[in-house]
Amino acid sequence: MPAHKAAPLVLSLPLGEPEPGAGLQRWLYDALRHCILGGRLPAGSTLPSTRALAEHYGLARGTVQAAYQQLLSEGYLESRTGSGTRVSAVLPDATLRSGYVQRKVTPGSETPRAAPRTPWIERLESISPVFAKRAVAPGTRPFFPHRGDVRSFPMDLWRKLHQQHLRASRSSLLLDGDPAGLPALREAIAEYLHIARGVHASAEQILVLGSVQQGLDLCLRLLVPPGERVWLEDPGYPGARQLLEVAGVNRVDVPVDTQGLRVEDGIRQAADARLACVSPSPPPALGVEMSPARRLALLRWATQSGAYIFEDDYDSEYRFIAKPIPALRSLPGASSSVILAGTFSKLLFPAIRLAYLVLPEQLVQAFTRATALTARHANSLGQAVLADFIREGHFDRHVRRMRKLYATRAEVFAEAAQRHWQGLIRVPEVRAGLDIACTLEAHTEADAFARLNTAGIDVLPLSRYCVTPRPPGLVMGFAPYDEQSIAEAAKALEQALRAPPSTGTP
Image (cartoon, rainbow, N blue to C red; front, side):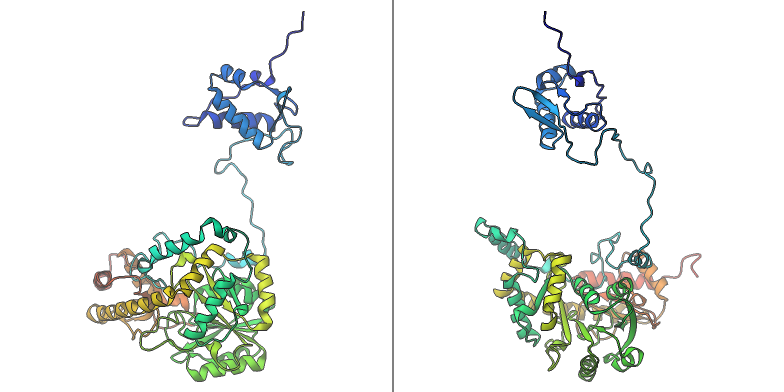
């Protein structure tokens, strides 16, 4: 009489009960995987047929088949003709050894592990990144600065161009791209800069990146040894200041006045600086352009000292009183000293995450190699769509239309300020950009900021842009908000700042 054949081990294992709401296929997969990793189903163990296991646990056979198939595809099981389904001799992850116990991780169940004390992490702990998420999406409430009107972007046109590049015949765009950027986009940028900004540069000198901030990071890594000095505008863009703080360089805050960066002060403080970060047309917050004399002085210093100038072409296209002034990079003798940075996030929409550097020829190879190593390349599909958008004239038309729209909103903003904010906020003439620095006349920054935040109005304190103390002020944006929104917010702001202090307020 033949010997009795033992039932497969799995039928004698308690697999537990499914959690409420959990699918039976997921439960069975997790239970079998747990037994395999814990050694309760050792290598070579035979599993029952799907029919037998389904009958034993009261499951649909399809449920068991699906769980088996997932374990087979992940390498936990192997199936051979004539020998059934067995536990694999070698598990898919060498770190999952016999004796491993799978357990659910719940908050607080793990012993916290301290972050390593590297210089970068220590310096990051001392700042609050300006790009961190806010409770309310930035730009959705007046008068948050540094935002354009994405609602006016020609989305249907962009979608059409996007779909054209998703055809099967253009599938090469789904592969890896050139670290320097899509050649078609670099050529389009070079042509645009020649016409609009007076910059003469070949497409080979264009490096496409994800942001101006990434471009500044590359400059700090490649051009400034740790501990060396870098000029930065004061007031200036807080994101640049924070990047310098964590990069380990010695930041030199150079004051800005009504003619722009005080070059003579920079030379007096640090004539041997390796890099100067400037926004000459115009810088964030103050909205003043660097005068021709200061531009020449800055370029003369860089040429004589062997330093480089990082020119952030911030909001240069949105100048309301006349045509945009030429870039610093366009001046004679600037091509070997000036690195021009521009972004499409302000001109089109923030999520596009495409920017560029115009590099001196001697830096092209090093910057391209660094980009290949650290970021590989920017989004190829987005670059292709943007290249068409520029070459077909849509970009130029969009910028012209938005310049006119923003100029109108700047006038509405100024008129609303004149009507409602007398004695509260002094608003200078709005000549360019998406926002303006205003002077507080009746409150401290902290008091005004708290009152406006409670009233549902977004602004930024001017002190966030400054190292050297200045009179209290607010940086306020007008570009994304229509006339009605500006008028209503202006009245709400007046009410908030004229209201008597609440009980307990100093």
